[in-house]
Length: 158
Ligand code: PNS
Image (cartoon, rainbow, N blue to C red):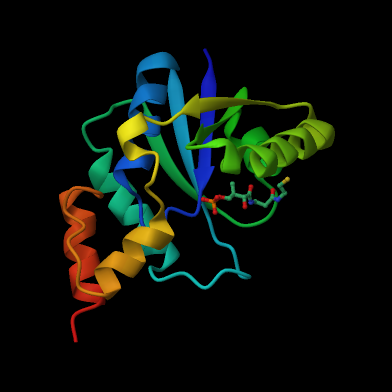
């Protein structure tokens, strides 16, 4: 049994995240999506809102669990019995930082990180850009799941 841990801020989850999670769901026995509570990053959505969004989006996949966490990712990986961490890579600009995280995590616990190349048509997508577009009144319906688009509309409804 192989368990993959897919960590992130998911503030909010985008179609890029969903693509990575769905592909992990079809490859690994179990997938744990780890939603970080990062006190140094001010999030638009609360931790429980982000967990709720992911639970809704992933409800059709029966081998997925959504967990929130504080602290070190390697500790979560140990606690959930993950064999591998999986991260999506959009472009080379992601690579330096992600490689650094992967090597630090390997140093800390020996866990391996695997990278999944995002679909080319989603390569420009990020939670930050989605929030900016939504905040300024642009359409995000093609960028995020419907429930997330509705939550963004409500968040920026003034
Ligand atoms: O979606 P993000 O913000 O790119 O996700 C970053 C995340 C959550 C994967 C990263 O910040 C993380 O692993 N945080 C947990 C704290 C930790 O373990 N830090 C040391 C990593 S080398």
